[in-house]
Image (tube, rainbow, N blue to C red; front, side, top):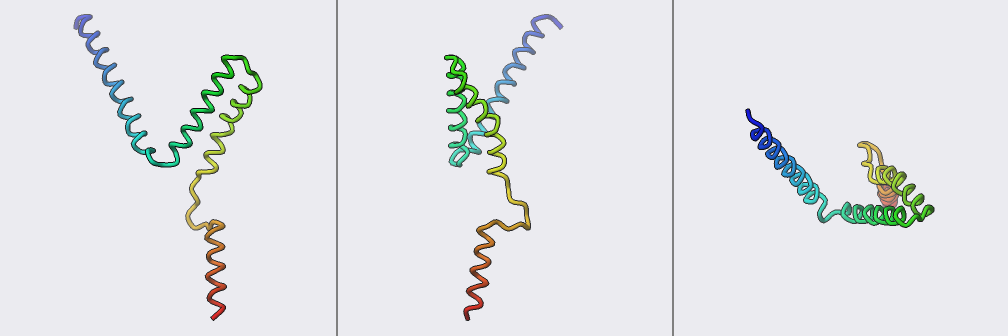
Length: 107
């Protein structure tokens, strides 16, 4: 194999890499389009912009606050959007069950 063959393989690998990244990003956008995740991502994007601008201009307090929001925000997102375990009741289901039982006793 000559050196030109290696250059072609490297060129081909770069093209495949770009196509794979494009495909993954395309699928992610297709999945979240029209959901509340779009609003969530916009909010995260705004926080990141504020963080970078505050770092650039040396606004230490604002930069620290945005860092805390980013650090704890991801944990909050996980807690807020966690799925309810099967077999457990939410407060809304419990209230509805009480109303059904109360309506049954009134007969």
